[in-house]
Length: 329
Image 1 (cartoon, helix red, strand yellow):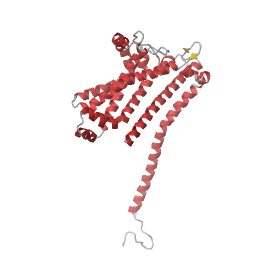
Image 2: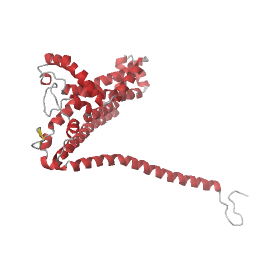
Image 3: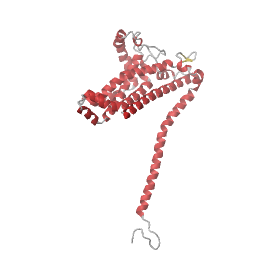
Image 4: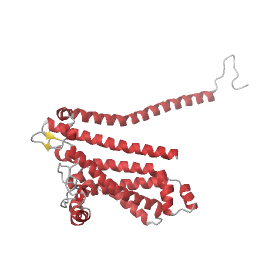
């Protein structure tokens, strides 16, 4: 008798097919649950962001109504007379981060190229370990090192040299000072150096070896191979590492607060003290005794968030343009 033939007029159920149907139904149900859970986890990220943004807007609304756009463009800061302007802090944040990138990007990218493309010795692993250890040092330790070591060194050697050789430029005019914008920029450069080096190294190692072999087969030197066959495919990833480093530089608080001088003034000289958005929050948030002062501090945090979003948005746009250019080529 066939497996599916009726017996006494009643069809025989095929258990094998029923089992497959049950398994298929179970798999579909499991996939739906998995899709729902992952969707909720993904939705939690923008939910957290918009909740932070909503809180900042709500708590800073008193300051926004009181000062308007004058708060962003103003430069006076006097808690006694309730005069507040955030422009010196925005200037200090952007300038210190720019100094850090100018120093850290060449150093970090050069170190990453050496570790990934040049060195074949075991010594490079020790360098990579030391780079990772730099990332693990607390920011307050960097601040103490900046006060007792870096600041005096800059005052004794670096700032007088730049003042003598490049003193005709406004950025190198004035008397040397240990607590200055230059000290803060150098500290930030050291702090973001591990991020640029580590991420850039990983990106360079992902580039296919066939591109290196093709360039060398055509007679290219090591420099030409790195320049023409390795760097172009890795440009997007390298810029991504710079974005991550910039994010830390913009939001760094403790180390910068300890070495920048904390003076709410706009000065063209890198030897002069400065102030950043995160530093003023760290220094004066606990002293906000009135509702207006508290709202001002929260608006400073809101401006810091906006500045970070703008900088990262511009960097992402640059990555998109570079990626589109590479696809066209």
